[in-house]
View (cartoon, helix red, strand yellow):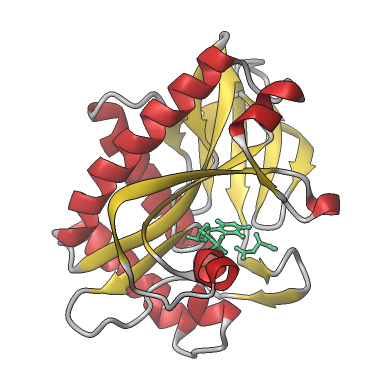
Amino acid sequence: MQKLEQIYEGKAKKVFKTDDVKRFIVDYKDDATAFNGEKKGQITGKGVVNNTMSNIIFALLEEKGVPTHFVKQLSERETVVKAVKILPLEVIMRNVSAGSFAKRYGVSEGIDFHEATFELSYKNDELGDPLMCESHALALKVVTKEQLEEVRKYARMVNETLKEFFLERGLRLIDFKIEFGLYDGKVILADEISPDTCRLWDVETGEKMDKDRFRRDLGKIEETYEEVLRRVKGK
Ligand code: TMP
Ligand code: ASP
């Protein structure tokens, strides 16, 4: 497969066309941003960790019945994916209070929820990815009712699968963000699942094992990403 021109550069990845119109190649960078790009930095080796980890997880999710964009890892940083059209929605599932949830409601981090919460943000950097309720997503035709049903169903399946997967590896899945795309008219999981897009707390120590180490200047950033990958690969 031939890598052709770049069609998109995001904060953490570049996307390239290929000689197959149904395939893209994504290339993961070490660049890290937070607070809608206000804070910028580099996490050495992050691109390799996120690419490898995301692919392991997407392969697992496929086995569990969640369709994903994953096709084949090409190199440490590059993966062939299905050429989806990304739905402009950030889908966030939370099992435990943290981050913007704790801030919005003035509650502490670490409150266990009986049932996971499901929330949507409108994926739009200029607007700062505002929270979006389902009826607004439908009104603006960001998704159809049927697509939203699929999104909700798959988001729950991802949460159930990953809660167990990470727990077996000594990590509590606090919350995560996923994105979906359209491929052959169907909703499939796209983007990535990595320490950039999940909150993971060590079961024993409660230590934060994710991008909050960068967002909050907690140190040991590179080591933490490596440790998460080690656990994802090994148990
Ligand atoms: P939040 O608490 O800041 O809303 O974040 C919820 C989850 O979503 C957390 O696991 C981090 C992830 N996330 C992203 O992947 N990208 C983003 O731009 C933001 C704001 C959060
Ligand atoms: N993707 C977000 C940004 O650059 C960062 C985050 O994950 O908090 O703003």
